[in-house]
Image (tube, rainbow, N blue to C red; front, side, top):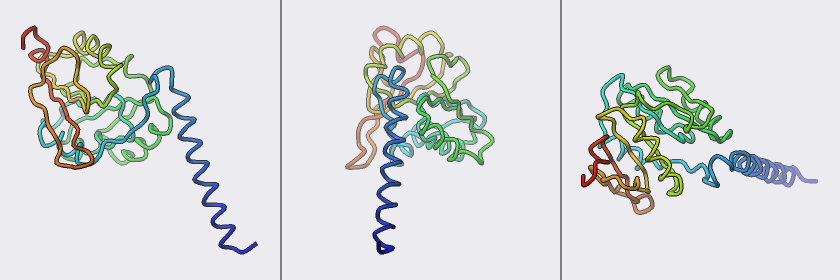
Length: 190
């Protein structure tokens, strides 16, 4: 068998193994995510978020469902914040650890953010599906401190009024980013 055929077969096998690992990581967390898949935030979306949500050095950012950690890393580099991410998908968690390995101000936790205490958060970033948002309203309302800001990509927080709605300048990634401030965004009639 020619070497190039062997190389092609090895490459195809490697890609199949990666796809299988990706699928297994999604299936393993299905009861928690209800089918939501790891989907990295595009660079233009992360930049738009950071451009419109300045943070003081040392502020605490929580990324609930942090995926590969790109938001954590970008915020820590740009604003010198403490950044904590929660991820239940084992493959995404591993990618986040690798991405942020050299950053002392970033912590990636393998676990369900529903069990996390968000009371100290200055900013909460999320890119979650609509079926999760109704439950998230209750958690945020019970745990956020006054003045905390929330950023939700693509899907609004039900019953809350955004302080600003952003649209990244991108033909592929121009879906809305909703910004909120607690408790003003969730006051009746706000």
